[in-house]
Length: 116
Image (tube, rainbow, N blue to C red; front, side, top):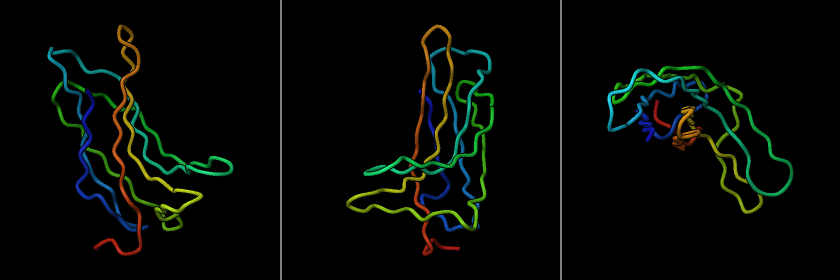
């Protein structure tokens, strides 16, 4: 199981989102290739839009991998309306050849009122 922990659950445009991720397993395996993706997507009526930043990382059992990402100043704010939602998320995907793809997700909010 992939775990993602964020230092803050709400940030403002221009602020840095910080967190850690790690892979929980019962065995002591070598580092595994994974992809860390941070970005936003829309849900609801109309076309699906998204903008994401991705990078390759190496995950090891119970070894924390820190990450940070500066939210762009022109980033859309989180929104939860009746017809559309703007969702910000951190996703880590681990490709295990013998079990298939494993995925961890953590949602966070981007708003103007986040503490600085």
